[in-house]
Image (cartoon, rainbow, N blue to C red; front, side, top):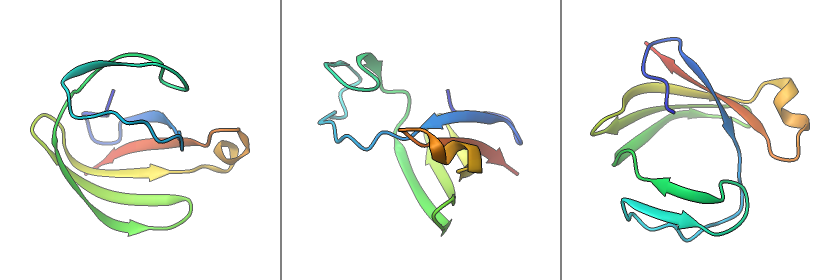
Length: 91
């Protein structure tokens, strides 16, 4: 789930496999990480403010979820097969 409150943090797992998931509100991903049923939670757009190899700051303007967020790749998150990022909502 996406963080809703300022300073709330969630784990985000990077998946570089390209999946052909359309904007259908529901569906099933047949294989790979994230396999199973999905439900579209929100639609909108985001604007990237700053970007580096280990930090991405962006503003999300969705219908349900919005605000300023940071994706942070901590040192411990770099050593896994799929990178482990922290998704943080900021004020």
